[in-house]
Length: 428
Length: 122
Image 1 (cartoon, each protein chain N blue to C red):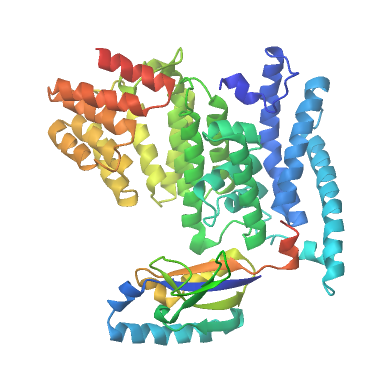
Image 2 (cartoon, chains in turn orange, purple):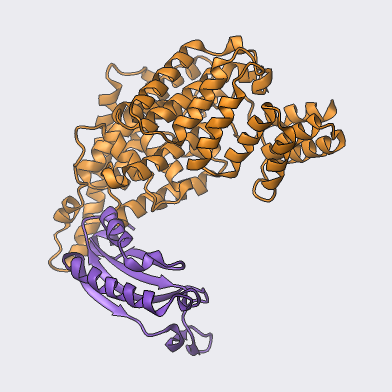
């Protein structure tokens, strides 16, 4: 999907393109800023995320139809809140009739008090409401795919169609995933609340992981060009900012925000005319210095809290790249040390693969290849593993094997821009 | 909210645990029930070994009786209790302190009990 397509929220066939697409971008920003707050507030007062979320989703669709015709109202947040309240009351009335029917069959159950009893505990009113909603959506009792879909829907206000495209899924499957997740939250009593100190770090890590997945998926959409889907990446960056602002004492929240800002800063050099450019070949003058300065400030803020973690280490590695004028001038030894530290938090194959790249850069390509080969089986289905392996084999003069590895990588990537990059390499 | 918690384990793995350690864990489990009495609505039951299980199953020409548990999984249900806690986070926090969770193969499944309010969510 293209950037403007991503911004055009509902699938309104009557909407002309071009001029309207620009205002759609503005609309989607308004929706993003407002919908999570309204869902959170409604869920708290109604005691049902399901009803709150449906009511807001409907209001968003209505808003986009109405605002396209009549323009954005002076107070779009109030407009959305009003519409969502109205929809929620409608739903409650329908439900009430149903509850009353049930109650008449089972004496002693008062339908209205049943609704009120479910009210979410309000232990964190001083914090951004959206954070409670976010922690609820990213509850470990939900599967990771459900966490992601529900976060995109309830917190960021994306439509089911957009979520389906962003997560390589179909609309019916996405819709079902969201409905099931909401029902599970309601039926199992998962609280919409920021967890207390004992659980905070582990739960925050899930939230941050989801935000990071959201950012990465924006760049991986099958058939997409490198410049596409800025919208979802932008949503993820926005969400990381919301979290860091609401939880200023959480070092890892600043760490993830810093990491994403560093990545975002490279965006225009990473994707040139829809073609993917590897970091080593990027025109570093195109890196956005304003974003890099912001990223560094976030990383400094995190460091002052003196609670290291994996996102800060990832960001510190990104900072090493940002510091260097060229790939050769990069302090690869520092990068390697940071990867060694990172392994203590995250010994995943992907981190080990990246560490191998640093190992090669400090002059140990043979050791790097040994490390990469040790990951065989764990990453064999990931095109990056084959691509890194190809690079190392080429460095060691094993050209035939390198071409074979590049071909494997090519077979495994679904992203058009990445395919073209790999195809160019095998043709060389 | 009320939840049923089901204790599951792998009998083969448990068989490798020393008698002493098992006795210690049973002692701590009893203590656990005492300490958390306020949150336990019904102590439930500990079940006899899975070898004693008999299952009555659907059959096309009438139900059939078979030897063994309902599922062929290596893990079996060893018992259950009913807890009454404010929400899922409280249920998870309580279950996390179950002493046997330090043995490989052990798990505790948490399931909310169906109520009128939850029925209307369907």
